[in-house]
Image (tube, rainbow over all chains, first blue to last red):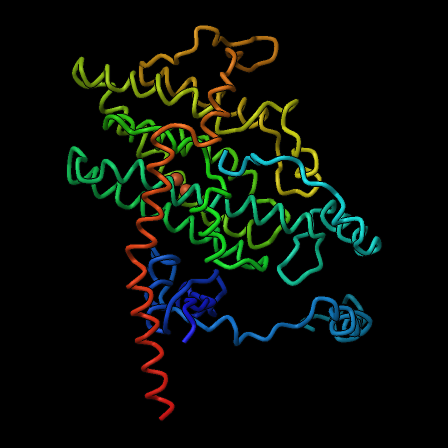
Amino acid sequence: MSNVTPIWEVFVRAKNGLSHRHVGSVHAADARGAVEAARDVYTRRAEGVSLWVVPSSTIIASDPGEAAALFAPAEDKIYRHPTFYVVPDNVKHI
Amino acid sequence: MYTVDYSKPQDARAAQVEDADRLAAFDARVAADDFIEPKDWMPEAYRKTLIRQISQHAHSEVVGMLPEGNWLTRAPSLRRKAILLAKIQDEGGHGLYLYSAAETLGVTREELIEALHSGRAKYSTIFNYPTLTWADIGAIGWLVDGAAIMNQVALQRTSYGPYARAMVRICKEESFHQRQGYEALMVLANGTHAQRRMAQDALNRWWWPSLMMFGPPDDNSPNSAQSIRWRIKRETNDELRQRFIDATVPQAEALGLSIPDPALKWNEATQHYDCGQIDWEEFYAVVRGEGATAKDRIQARIDAWEKNAWVREAALAHAAKRSTKQAA
Ligand SMILES: [Fe+2]
Ligand SMILES: [Fe+2]
């Protein structure tokens, strides 16, 4: 058993209809403790109606060094955007 | 200020060995007000300076709970007690947002706390003054939180994403802190002769230390230029201090209290208040942690950490036992 209290990432749903959004992290021995800590740290003023906590060590992030390779190909596919297509001004509702 | 850098300038050797291209790209991003995020490449000196600044800020929030906690059980009414409790809880929250931001730079919470307890890490000198009367609680909210807000508002645009986001949250919560303090002093200032004297006495003792929170004057602030280039400091110590003075003097007038500075007067030409000399010798003595209150503060933190160790251990033992049970 490690004597270091694990870190959990905290996500808050501000209200129903919105997705959970990352707000920060807390330390807790287990998931239940993490929810309780997240409640005290991140929702003291009714900031949310639902919490997610996820062990930080389980998050897999893309490498910023590979950002160009991952995201750049999207930039030259401008035909994926509606503004690429020219439609006469007198044609409406399109 | 909570984020004033009290250490000597860093030597640049670490940076020299780093890839010049990546450094140039980093500098350009920061100069363009882009945000740097945790996994992005950053110069080692930037990372180290940020860890020091953010953790110092976090320690200040947490140590700052102590002088106010001193009055919790003696608050003059249930209303004041509930307010003070909520304010202190916010400060604990601020400390946690900031520790969480610092941890994204690759340092552990345990290392940060150890640095505070061993005296290697600093916290704002303002919390090394004692809270002698109830009026001090009002003065802290009005002046100390007021001074902190000046700096924190500017830091909402700091270059390191997690730090900037923590600042946005903190700023949302701070204005209640300042207003409740001002209101508490207002009650005393409009009260009996003795209450009025108590309010004036608190202002007399907290005014100069509050001005010192902004740190040394610009011509004696060695790390400022680099920090401003890195956008981890957005305005100079003297600019922020002047803004605080200009905002606060009329607030003191509205209370009918006088600011303990005979040289203080409005300057029509500059459209700012001129003020007297700050006693920087006192400031550096407090930074060095001289005086009984500084020792009490750190001892209180160490006691809290050590006396509660069994709770952390029990929680971990319980979690380990449950997960083995589930696996079986
Ligand atoms: Fe705070
Ligand atoms: Fe505050």
